[in-house]
Image 1 (tube, rainbow over the protein chains, first blue to last red):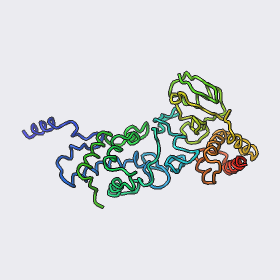
Image 2 (cartoon, each protein chain N blue to C red):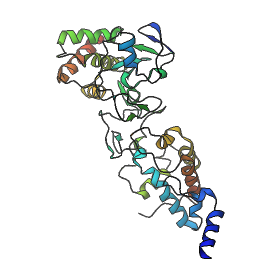
Image 3 (tube, rainbow over the protein chains, first blue to last red):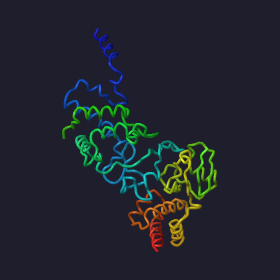
Image 4 (cartoon, rainbow over the protein chains, first blue to last red):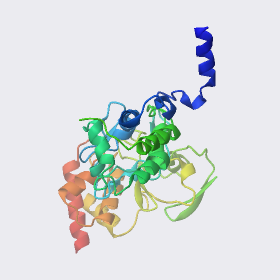
Length: 197
Length: 152
């Protein structure tokens, strides 16, 4: 009987309650309330934010990182005044509007239009979850965005979305951009609480 | 079919869209001044200009170039290109020469954007152009020399 109840409960649950590619959906947090729920939602958001696909272009300092091991970008490149590389060696010297598979072997060079670094104020590498949370909410450091605009960036920006379609040789971030956007929205709607410390 | 301009002339390339521009330049258009080095945008030997900006042709599919304007080492023109090539000759920069088409294109791009670069500006712009003969000191000197020529 207990097994039958469990099966019926699973069948009755909406499909979106299931974890998608390693990212839990908003519905999976329905059993939680208040600040605990908001913090838990943000910690799920961090599964994406702290993935190398995102951190590599939110670096601390002047150089992007690359690869799942987050090594310093090769060839060596610098951020430049516009977060777009140095004059004569801009990001677009190598990165095009889309991922390009190498024709000489395995792998690909990533691409998207635009392709550039996040500003230095938005560096995530080396920050704790709590510090990233505070930074995301701080207009002085987040590009003067309010929380609705933060949601829009996370849920709809094409370069953010590249993280789920990074090309051959790179692991995508967990989930989908749709699920990620829903998590960000639910975090905001529950008060955008940050983890402790 | 991709229609584009190469060195001022209209060309149509009837190639699979994922064919690298470098292949098209060398094998179809017989513009062999642009070199293959690594094929993965790590060495800079294949640098050309696309719509006035430096671009690694080994990772540039021809299908992305509809309507684009490509300049190669064979015909790159303008005061910066001339100053760079004159300085390269004057200082005798190349050793084996394999990477030098790419070096000249990147140096020209730098001077078009920054006519008076510092050592740091040069190092940042040229960091993606590898030279197996290690002519880096002469490359830097030649770019300074070209900048002085442009100045006056």
